[in-house]
Length: 375
Image (cartoon, rainbow, N blue to C red):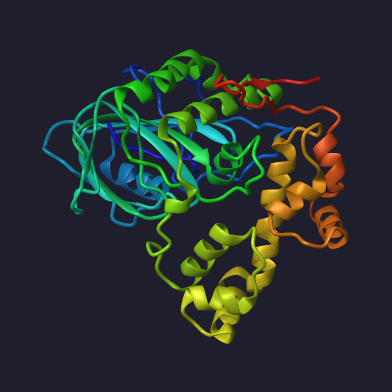
C-alpha cells in the first residue's frame, strides 16, 4: 500500500463512502493528490471523495505520479500479485487521505502550498533518505512532512495516512487572535509523545465525521479548525525559521519572498533582488508563466490572505483596516475597490457575514482555543 498525498479526483475515480481514519486506524481508507484542491470559500463547503484502486502497476505509477506531482515515482515488483488502493476525502481546507500499495515504491514528492501530516499503518517509510537526517514514519505516530520544498520518499509495501492542510488556511489559523499577518510556517518534523497525545486524541474523535461527505458547511468548518489547531499546538510553528534558500528558480524565489514578506511595503526592485535577477527579467518571467506582473501577483496574494483573514476574524475584536494592513495594504479605498472587484462583496460584508461559520474564541488563561458555529 503507499505513501500518499492528494487533492482533486482524477479521471476514472469513483465515489465511495469513507471509513474512519486516525493515528491508530489500520483500516482507514485513502484521501487525495499532492497538488491539492482549490481553497473553497469558508461559507460554502464542498466535500469531495475520491477512490482509486486496481491491479495494474503501470496504472498505479501513472496515477501516483499525478497524485504526488512526482515525475519519477516508481514501484518495484517482486513477482507476486500487485494491488493499490487510494482514497481522499475533504474540502479545500483540510482533507484526510490514505494510500495502500502492495510493493516497494519511491519518488520525489512536491507538496506545493500544503502542509502534510503523515503516519504509517505498517511497512517502513523513509523521508529524506538522501539527506543527512532522514526521518522514518512509525505506526500511529504523526510527523509533519517537509514544507516549502520537494522531498524523497521510499516505502515498503503497506499503508500510510495523511492529513493535508491548505497552506493559506493553516497560516491564517496560526495567527487568529493575534495582530500578526499570516506567514509561511516552519515546523519540526517530529515532536515528543506528550505533545502528540492531544493531536492523536482529536484525530480519533473527529475522523469519522470528517470522512462523512454529508458533513458540510458550518459543521465541516468546525472540524477543520479543530484539527488545524490541534496540529498547530502539537508542532508549534515557527514562522521566522522558514528557509527561503530552499526554492530554486526565478519564480520560486520571487514567490517565496512575497509569501514571507507580503505584509511589508514591497517594490518590484525588492522582489527582483530576492529572485537574483533584474526587474526586466522578473517582469518577463511572470508575464510568461503567470500572465501577470510581479506586483499584480503580489496584490492577488494579499487579497487572498486578507479574505481568509476576514473570514476567520471576529468582527467584535478586529476591523477591516487592521486585517488589510496586516496583509500589506496601506490605502483602504484602493483595497476596498480591489476586494469588491475580485470577490463581489466589500471587505466589511465578509467580516460581518450574515452567517459566520467560524469564530475562534481567544485563548485565555492557558485554555484551548475553541471553534464554534454562530448562526
